[in-house]
Length: 382
Image (tube, rainbow, N blue to C red; front, side):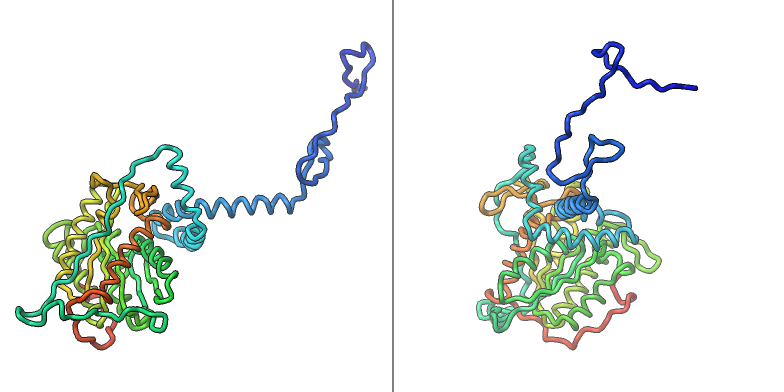
């Protein structure tokens, strides 16, 4: 029969002493000794879960902008859609609370100082007056819109892709502080003018004009249009003369749709990108937007490319605001704008352009046409 002998204490010779443990220090919250290991105390499970939940929510709000960008660049599917449904509201909460600026503070502490001095307002291209020589001079023309007032607020419709969503959020927040505006946002992830088979923007804008009845439209497309075009069974290579003509026709279609309904349009160009190759394509797109805007009365083009470039004309994630404060204006993907400083920077430029419609003499718009009808997919140029 085996006998188990208790361990002897070296100081007790042949005898032994029971080992006495010091009473464990109690933690900052109530707890009970764990029966199997008395030296450990455990707290109530509900309290532990509550603390974990609070920590998770705080982390989620802080990390939401970066997580949202990661989700936007992921492949299309249910997982991406579900992620964006959760992360977009959290990222907006983060921006409203100013928590998105903590990333900028951390970058400054780490010495990331690729910055540029404060730059002037974005360049704005006014539409070319389409009237014969010797007719009414421009100085005699009046503003397109009456100045917005609290009694008669201006309705603003904002349309575009995911970068357009950055602008829309910044402009909505800017105009929310004014009682003279009502805003409507219709932006779609991964959309653009290159793939009407994926999302048909002329159809969507035609419906928006009827349902929302805006006084002015702000549009921003191009972030996803760096691709070949397909018209029927015919493929068109990105950057070719044929591509520029076909894409220009799609831009003109949108401009005609808005101005033909008697509404002015602010068209915002694409910003410089972190990838030089993509920046080159954005410059090409911007040249098309600028050219079409000049040919359409009632369209004002806003250049966003130089607005987000540093003093050397290069991409910079960190720029200074007019007061000289360093801000992170671009997300880590090198494409999107930060929801706080980046979106606000572009929103201010778009707002200054919008003001021209009620303060500056402008060429007349086309006579208001009947409400636009839905455009069949085959009717879109390309």
